[in-house]
Image (cartoon, rainbow, N blue to C red):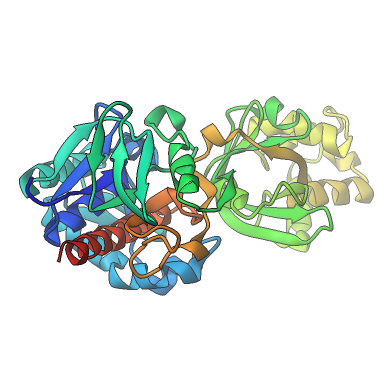
Length: 416
């Protein structure tokens, strides 16, 4: 290479997009990745189907970003979901839109997205290099290269796209935070986001493996203020709660400042009065039915003994013997099934990391550091995260594109 390359550190979604953007903007590019294969984390997104964006407007994306959405405005308006979809279709990946605007490859294979990016990198002439960035080489307030231990790579610009701390098996080990700190950056302490939640008790364990659809989950803090409420699907596990609803709820929790209770409405389509009227109607139709058999008409079987214990009604009690107070207890428990929470699962089990490089220290238009010239950031290393539904990958694509173009422009200006 005759020109000093832009070095992209990290071959995930943001890194691959950044490398392609820099190369298409005229820069020589080296993509540095310690794993044997690129895009390891992409393989597990969307349960292996790769929910690669959400078919919405830039404003729709920003509404689903949990923090620092204003920082993302420039990048997401320049490379919105519609443009991302067009980009991947042009790479030969036909797409489809599913419930909630979620966009997937028609093949339902994450591998097709990774292969398309890989072949584009090869076709564009990006140099793929297996290796780990140990240090940034700095001189006179600017980055001039990357140290790989005993070897050093000169760089016209460096893009850090190393991910966060979630899914460490895919290579997200937090190394980028150390590199960013060495260049003067503040790291907002990383915490898990989009993560299952642990129950402070054993109620969930008694229903392990049971999934619920069309329930409403409300997350309340210790002052009983509602911080999240949504209808959807969830799962009981040996430790507590998981599933799409729970992952979304977890993004609203700040465990360093608060404690939370999950409250389930098991019959969100029925107001309390209508639910009680239905119960009375069912009792009239089978007055001698035992309470536990009666509950099986209202709830999944695995939930019946748990509900019976919660409302403190004998399982063999004939339902025509239920008192008004007992019926009210049942209605209350079905509409407000409370589960005190102990906290999130470990960060390694999270889908994304909240926290990272402080966005106030990064130019939102180019993704260049305000602390060290020639240093750029893309993706999960930044203090940006969003709800489930393709929004986190949209952040990766648009910040990767902005960083790649910004790095190519900076490198060219420095050369000239």
